[in-house]
Structures are given as C-alpha cells and as structure tokens.
Amino acid sequence: MEQIDNKLDNLFDICRQKMRKRLDRPFIPENTFLIIVAILVGLAAAFLGIAFRISIDLVEEFFFGLNESILAFMGDYYVVILPVIGGLVVGPIIYWFAREAKGHGVPEVMTAVAVKGGKIRPRIVLVKSIASALTIGSGGSAGSEGPIVQIGAGIGSTLGQIFHLSEQRVKTLVSCGAAAGIATVFNAPIAGVFFALEVISGEFSASLVSIVVISSVTASVVARAIFWGNNPVFPVAGGYALSSPYEILFFALLGIIAGLFAVLEIKTTYKIEDMFEEWKSVPEWVKPAVGGLVVGIIGISFPQVFGAGYATIDAALKGNLTLYLLVILIFLKLIAVTFTLGSGGSGGVFAPSLFMGAMLGGALGVVLNELLPGLTTISGAYALVGMGAVFAGAAQAPITSIIMIFEMTNDYRIILPLMTACVLSYVIASQLHRESIYTLKLSRKGIKLREGKAKTILETIYVNEVMHKDVETVPVSLTVRELASRMRESRHTGFPVMDGDKLVGIITFLDMRQALDAGREDEPISNVMSKDLLVVHPHENLNEALKKFALRGIGRLPVVDRDDKRRLLGIITRSDIIRAYNKGLLELDKKAQEKAF
Image (cartoon, rainbow, N blue to C red; front, side, top):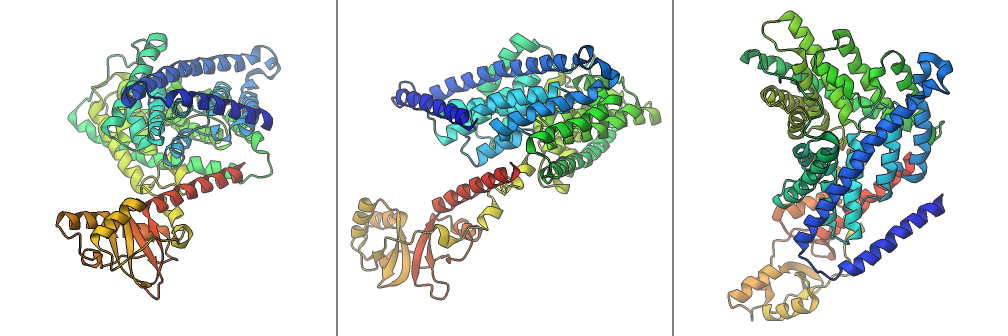
C-alpha cells in the first residue's frame, strides 16, 4: 500500500515538474492566467460536485435496496446494519489513503490556508468523494457541503501546484474551489463566495473577491445547466411574510434560542470526537462502524436522521411535521451527526445544522401558532429562519447564513426576520463560545485564527532558538557615505552600531536615506542612528518579542544579555518569527495527526 502511495506522489511530482518547465516561460499576463485557472477550478468543481451528488444517490439506492435481497431476513430492522457496513468500508479507505478525509472537511481546508500555504494533497479529491458518498449514502448522518468544499479546495490547490503558482495564488485558488463547491451543491453562487471569504480565508480584498466570484459563477452556470435548472434547493410556495411588525420579537427569541443550541452543537460535536479519540482499544478503521451502529439504532424508529435529511427539512418548511416529531428530531439528529463524524465518518455539518435549525424553528413556530394564532405566521417561516440562525451561531458566519438561506429558497420577504435571528444567534454563540464549529478544531491544534497568530505556539518558542548569532555590525565611527556603500554590498537594510564591543544604536536604510537627502553624507552615523534601543532577551518567547515589533512597527530587534543591555548576542527579524511560527504549527499538526492515527 505504501509503495502504491509513493508511486502516486511521484507521478504527481513528475507531471508538476514538466508543467513547471513549460509555464516558467510566461506567454500571457499573470492576472489573465489566474482568471483562466479560476474558471478551470469552477468547471472542475462543478462537474465533480454534480458527480458527487449523483454518487450519493446511487450509493443510497444500493444500500437501502439491500432489504430486497441479502438483508430481507431482517425485515424492517435491516436499516440498523446499513451505516455499520458503510463504516466498515469507509474506515479502511480513510485510514490507508488519506486520514484528513475523515470528519467534516472544512477545518482541514482552513488549516491548509492558514498553515500549509494552501497545499492540499491531490488524492484528497478522490478519497473524500468516495468516503463521503459511502458515509452519507449508507445512512450516515452528515451533509454534502463539507466534502464538496474539501473536494473543490483540493482541485484549486492541485491546479495551483501544477501550474507552479505562488503560495498566495494557491491560497486564492483554494478559496475559489470552496466557493465553487458551495455554489454547485446548494445552487447558491453568492453564498459560495461569502462562505469562501468569511469562513475559509477570512479576507475580503477586492482582488480575492473578483477571482472567487469568477469560479463561483462558473460552477453555478454549469450546475444549473446540468442539475438544478433555475429551481432553488428548497422552493417555498408563495413565500413567507410577517403577520405583524411585532412578530419580529418572536424571531429575535428564535435567534437567542438558536445561538444557545449552536453552542450545544459545537460542544457535543467535539465531546463525541474526543470520546472516540480516547477509545484506544478499538482500531481506528473500525470506529466509523461503531458510530454507524448508533445511527442505525436511532434510524429504526426515526429514519429521518439518515443522510443529509433534505426531505425532512422540506416537510418542516411546509409545516407538515408534528410538534413531537420536530422536538425529538432536534436532539436525535444531534446525536446521529456527532456519532457519524466523531467516530471517523466523512461528511459535512452544514446540512445537519440546517436540519436541526429547521426542526428548532418549526417547533417554536408550532407553539407560537397555538398560543398566539393571530399574531404569528405559519411554522414553516420559523423553520426557514431557524435553519439560518443555527448555522450562523455554529459557524459564526452570519453573512453567509443570511445569503445562503435567501438563495436556497428565493424568498426575500422573510429577510428581516432572518437577519435579526442570524445576527442574534451569532452574538450569543460567539459570546458563550469563542470558537466556531470549524475554528475549534484548529484552535485545539494551536491555530488561533481569531487572533491572527497562534499565540500558544509562539509562547513555546524562545528568541535564542531562532535568532541570528552571526551578526554583521558597523562601527560607530562609520560615515553615512560609507554606510551606504556597505548596504549596497551586503544588501542588508539595517545594522547594529557598535562602539568597541558595546551596542550603542541601530542604523536603518531609512535613517541613511534621510541623512543623504539632507546632505549629511560625511557625518558619522552616530549622529543619525537610533539610540533609544528597543531590545529583546534570549529567553523571551516569540509572543513577547512580537509585541515589541508591533510597538514601533520595526523589522528587526537586537538580542542582548539581560544583565548587560550593551552586550549584543544576536538579532531577530519579523521573518524569523513568521518562519518559526509556521514551522511550529506544521510540527504540531503533524504530531496531532500521528497521535490520532
């Protein structure tokens, strides 16, 4: 198996090297080339996304048709064994070929963007597709958006690597693939763009938005031409509207409840995942079957928990479910999805969040209809708003949630209640739980996206581990003219200034430039250097050093003895900290994977 694995990697490297030789000779402008690649990403994500959705249907048809053949002896209880069989097939596939394909996929894409320069192994596209189709099609309680995001991102990353693009460009293509995936699977091109920007990259620059839009629109055009047509995922006949202006208060209440439930979803998801991680007596590849058994047992009485549950969501939107069923499905779906993904199955949490939100909103709508029939609209409207509100709290992405629900239903009249509930849910969830259902997985590895730096990683690395000890210095007697010549020769942009063996200042390119412009080229650099020194000590951690860099916006700091601030020991730059940070995160991620596997 390892030999096959290595041969696949070698084949990819050979193809990439040949492509690089051709593309190292530019023949079209870079921006034009990037647009072409973004279109290719959109096309590939659309076709693979459609194939993925079809494969889920085919797998589901195969598994749930087994009761007519080899499982007929089990009667109606045959559904118990289906997710178990799926787990027994999926477990070895993930374990042997791509272990990052387990779970809901989006955190792995975010990790690739934040830590790995956007690089995702090409095999992820194939392994994630197969594993997720088998998980969902055999009855596993998960959604298709997480897999398609990882598949689309994998396509973008692979093309970026094949075409030898820069790290920033590869990250851009990863975002393009994620947007194209969402646009394909939910027929929601605008939401796909905002998902990629708000959740995946966390960046809203004009250049990034433009390229991501191109991929998302391309994927959506293909998906509508082949699969969706002009139909929304959840068509709402006649649309929903407020019965009175005062009803907005009830939707605000729904937002608060949804925010609280979103926190419960996040904590439960990772609690079950930890439980399976700590269960060492069972082989890793068998655990998905155990999770599947739990889902199968639930599915005997409540088959609605199987798969993504789109049909049940549609029934809630039409007001066709009883209060009892709405309430119980909220918690049974939570159990089913957490055991499916926590045990190592492959699928997404987006659709399950929509499912639980629809049940939660629908239940509140039924209660309000009974208590205040003249002041409230139908329960389907509350189910619709609940879908967006729960995901807004769980993913802490209110903009994506609002636009997603609007595009999935084409119902604009409910936009004010939707905005109210989503924002309130986000506020409640973010106050009670700093990390989202996506970022918590990164946070547990030391990747703090909200802070922009992995503070916990930086606090474990010390200045003396990354500083340069062989420092090029200049004497205090050097003139500005002589310093200019030295800088041209060395290509350094700054030097520590020494008086004998004592550090007396720092001289930078900017100091020299200002002195030359003022006609002071024959003066000693002691007249223009910075004497008010900001220094670091060898045993300070990088987080403390980084704060000093930010204090004055400088690019380098001298490292001095704590007891003698004039004794120069080395120098540290921002680039040193960034390199150490990225290396530390990669090592931590590797250790976490080794521990898990």
